[in-house]
Image 1 (tube, rainbow over the protein chains, first blue to last red):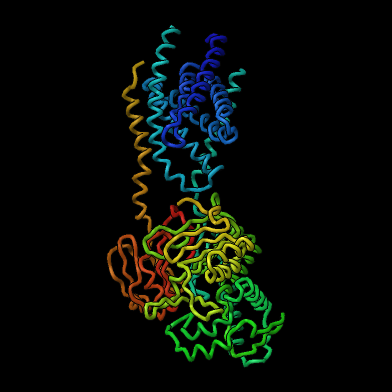
Image 2 (tube, rainbow over the protein chains, first blue to last red; image 1 turned 90 degrees about the vertical axis):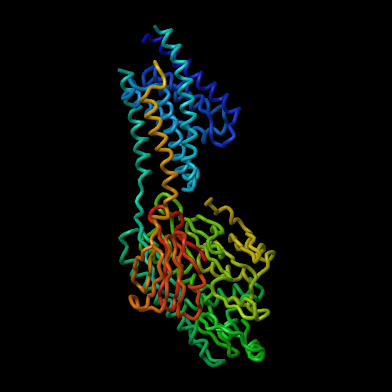
Length: 167
Length: 324
Length: 121
């Protein structure tokens, strides 16, 4: 891939993620702690069109800037950065193994699940050192599975257009 | 090349993170619990595994201390009036604490009330309500001012009986905790029939202690979590009897010389088990306002379950509560 | 690219099962319970099933214990205070009913999952 094209895509996807991530903060869902995860579209797109290292840059930018704009920087960063990295890594491995048979729909569902599980882990280790929060995990993971599928569909739609332009 | 190093950096980061998850994900209990009967209750001690010798030491020490304190109590109770009876340093400490609680409760808490409560059959039964004549006769003997003590001796002015049971159990637990610390054990629980000391934390989380709901089958009243502190509950639901529809609990007010039934239970968190134990009884005797005043002075969180089943949290109890 | 593919659907179903698994598991925690009979320094495990046990013959204490599928209680005891009989059912993890004069107690223990390390009473 051409160098400039790559840099442009990193910037584009990161900006995409950040804007959606910040935008999302203004529309809280009825359940506390649950968000649609629109910002992950950018990460999904970069996973499918860029190298892993480039994706990590998108992840880094997204985590940092969404946390800065959302306020409460330290906690947001602590929660989102490791989870986003873990979920991006898992999705990357998943695409490498099953990419020929699967679409972003299942990739996103998997990533979303890893993301919520990591967040619970961090919450438990650093913030609420109380085992009881684990009892909510199944409900949260179900919802995140649904949002993950939804985000995966959106990513599919966008990817179709990117692919066409690339050809 | 640059890209490769970048990838390996992230691979490293990822594997560290995954390792972290796996590491914290699998935990083994690694604790051992032993139960035995001592001090008129069942004692449960939980320690990290492979501390058999410490268990033995604790059991022996508990028996020894309990024997010592009850023998001394009996000696004092059986001794004639006016005679100087020598006491150990442990007993001197208990007497000092008795004076402290007596003062704190403006006379309601008094170890000499055993003169009266004994007539009802406490602490071991069988129970019955003594007749008024007998009570009147004994009331004159009771009273903390009727004992005088020095660091080495104690003497009684009247033929009274004392009982330090309200807080000596807690004191023994504290002495056992000292043994644990000396043996470099910094995690464990000593549970002497509901009087608990929590030492350190349980591997990767804090110990969690429930306050029992006297109504069977209902949720715990409260679940608390803390470190290097004790919690003790005094209730009206364990040691009591009912006569003529009146509930006689084992807690007596030294001002009225009567059994009190003020609350369903009073729980106290304090730095030492002895203090939690003593204050739980002191608070049981007081009204809510007085408890509020005292607990802010002693800085001990209190949880009260009232007779009409209301839960009252005071002096920062809620800070230690965890959801359940 | 066609989406979702068949593999997608299979993977999502597997993930769904993973999510739902803990929900079903939670409801069966009753099966992790153990009923212990503590007599002096010995610990025996009693089966959690509907029955009434007289402890006199086997264990030498004059008490009767009634067990159920997930709980147990002491129904008769020769101790003067009757604290253990009055206690009623032991059901929750860690709950214990003690008869001190006979040095006998029944206790519910739960493996690993127990959330409570002790009960103040």
